Image (tube, rainbow, N blue to C red; front, top):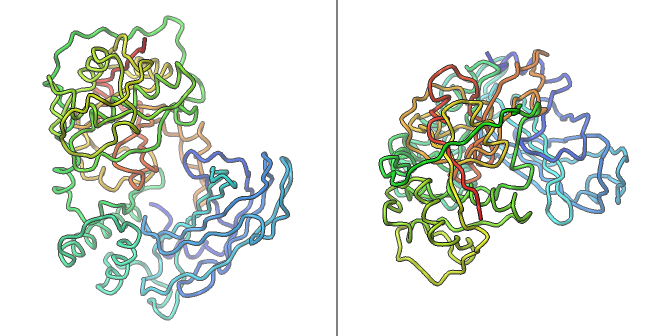
Length: 482
């Protein structure tokens, strides 16, 4: 079981174990991070202190501190990296530093024992991320809470849930709420499901968190985001097969094309079944960056509007068909010249194509883990998965090991593979034991950055079932550019 409630609170006063955020550059090399008071108390001031030794020069920057409860942002604050944290800037690579920041947590009637996450993100003067750390702890007792000792009782009171619903709406103001009371009840049920999973799963399990889909039932989410985008029945073209080099050995520390600069920022398909188009552009963007050294975002909307001979826009398509369209079209237009609207539209033939994005050939990958590792070592690869499982809606972090089938319904992009141990994501949990090493595929999704690991998911790798976890091995392909 995950350390939570009374057990977590009992250890809270000791030094916490903290971990780097996923894909954090990690150049500050923070070695200690403490809270005061510990555990934090809502309605009181919280002080966060940290120290380390930077490996880069820092002239100026910003520190952002956020406190989240299972994905819901309770509060956040920005601080000037140099003037408000007690640092003596500029810092030179190799300099040791100690800093602290304090601010008030909001008052809210929440039961003690719930786990909160304190997230500290540091950026330089240009807004580029320097480092990010998270620390999990339990809420302490205040007058507005139940008296300690105690545990989260398994459900939220109406006052507690409505307070969190209000915070969630402020966090995602763009979400359209049609009927507040109906959406509140769905939100409360979803949040309790998330809390129950996180507090009752084992320490190596994936975590769930509330995101911008917190107001949707699973059936609504499934209809809007899953099941209509990937259409293998639309296959039109013959396929060549990826050949594994005879001397191929998977890199010991894995592969991550996002860290190598070959993956564009997370995008959001909205309520259009265009996942196939996002998977396609992801492959094109990766191949283009590897070929030219420049990362450029290409247009999904052009595929939705113009690639209509076989593919069906917001009603689904297939990545190989899209590669064939780009080959025949002699390139794809950029995102800037043909922006995404998320609805089927009339083809704009006047957008500016980039000839360097022209597909020469496209290749399918055999349905084995070794074949996909070989292909992903070469470049990002378009894949399809079965996302028709409710656990996908609120996936937040960790290696996704939930049961899922191989009936493919969602196009995504495999951008790497590795293990928690080799990625330095292995963390000390509260009882002092390490999480066991877990192998994964790193996959870029198109549901926005509030979902998952800032838009990515880690799917279990090495699962002994045909097609791999969620069928990721069953329909992989990639383009080769002219």
